[in-house]
Amino acid sequence: MTRYKTYRIKRQAVLSEEEGSMMNSAIILLSTIIQLIHCASYPDVKSLLSNISEFTLSEDGKLNFTQLVTKYGHTAEQYEVVTEDGYLVKLFHIPGIRSSVLLTHGLGTDADPYVIRGNGSLGIALADEGYDVWLLNNRGTKFSRRHTELDPDKDKKFWDYSLHEMGYYDLAATIDFVLYQTGEEKILAIGHSQGASQFFALTSLRPEYNEKVKLFLALAPGAFFFNMPPLFQIVASAGPLLLELGKTLGIEELCKDRGALLFLIKTICTKGIISYEVCVRAAIFPFLGYNPAGFELSFLRTLFGHAPSGFSRKCLEHYDQLYLRKKFAQFDYGFRGNLGKYGSRNPPDYALSKITADVAIMSGKLDTLSLIENGKILKSKLPNVVHFEEIEKTTHIDFVLSREASKYLFPSIFRLLQKYD
Ligand SMILES: *[C@@H]1O[C@H](CO)[C@@H](O)[C@H](O)[C@H]1NC(C)=O
Ligand SMILES: *[C@@H]1O[C@H](CO)[C@@H](O)[C@H](O)[C@H]1NC(C)=O
Image (cartoon, rainbow, N blue to C red):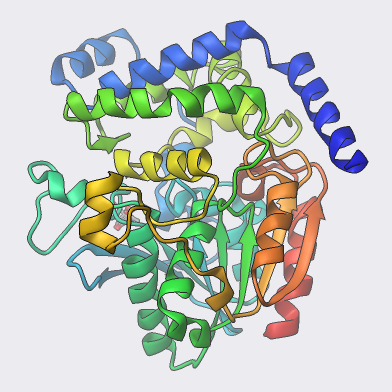
């Protein structure tokens, strides 16, 4: 009890000092509303903005995934994998001689951030170590806006998915594809945030996939959201209202590639010190953890050439439910919907006890979204956690984006993978 109290007080102190002001909360609430409204991509807004200013991206902000991998000394291949429910998800491959490692990304991004810091990013660093690296781009991201029948621009049904389907279908198809392609029996897998949620959804519902994974490393996993910081609570509590508003406005896709919202974000967030205040200090740090050393000013011009990437409103809704219901469970369709879909009033929990694969968890000491305490709760519910580690000087996004990840994070990852290689 005492330890828990100390922890909470410390966290609040950090919040109030750095960014917990009401002002910031107001800005964020407002910007969330603006984002939702603009997300639907109105062409007039877009042309207006394009007249006002242009992006000022760095070289690495302009290069695409393939070009970045080439620039940093490797080659990249692209595959399209068809899921059982008809989505075409893009899979990148950086060939190597050691075991295959599959990387899955967080909500609002795609595989790009895994290579945008050159040899200081996990995708390239693993390739430098000789691993055979595979990177999934979940359905709905800018690389995976395709379906055998559905048109993402016309069919709302395309956007009817959350972490559940990205696990059950996208990840399953990808694992099978990598095994087929490499002739291996098992792979190594690393998932950041939602990338971990989708892994747990898959392996709890289709336990046979546990047999296909030597080790799963969950970085800042998103499963439980107890004792969240005040700012998160404010926004997450407003979530149902904002999401309902989005639904009413017919907004199914968020952060559409070349859409107005993305244009707005990229325009505002690539302008130097003002951008850093607005996009990083006011919008990223308060939610995901405060660490200016990991996220320097000049990195804006690279990051916003690649992020955010598209996702469905339902993805956010599912996470909001995980927080509000305090359960790692399937999507809540309401009383009637649940009865029809699951035959029960409430959505079933993901049966974590069925996840027999070796799992490692790394939680960041500065992460204010995937809290260490919640990582420990996850650990207590999984039958086979082989490793749990708290990573110094690491926020939620630092796992993928920090300038210092090669110092604080990669050595732990390499040590762990080595044991399973
Ligand atoms: C990057 O651009 C090159 C040249 O236009 C293209 O051949 C390649 O397919 C692109 N890669 C991706 C991941 O879009
Ligand atoms: C990345 O490459 C540069 C230049 O070759 C080198 O100085 C640096 O140590 C490398 N960093 C890592 C993390 O390997």
